[in-house]
Length: 144
Image (cartoon, rainbow, N blue to C red; front, side, top):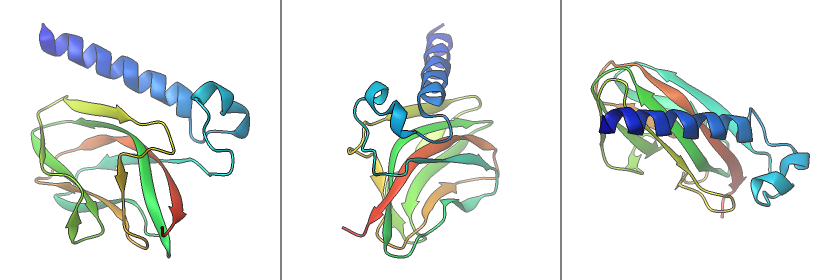
């Protein structure tokens, strides 16, 4: 019963975020989204990976940091996932997911959840060849 409630809440939160964020937040949406900075180009990137090891979610941009403010992630099977700053630096520890489990997390910019070092890609590492789907919302920022 508890898992059913969590899955329902996760689906509702994901649906609400998709409606809020769409593929890009437009300047006209700033008022309704809590005052997002009009000057930033907010972006989303789909997650649809199943290869064991490092999977690039957002490609590196020279002299730019990738700042993530929303994540929706669901696994099709048992797998540990962790977020990485490029190939070498872990941003999180292992997050164990079972089949049809996942999570949603959101921060209101300019607050962010994860950030890479300038010039590094945002990587999702999978402990095994298990399908993981979802999306991230982010902006790229000067190296500061």
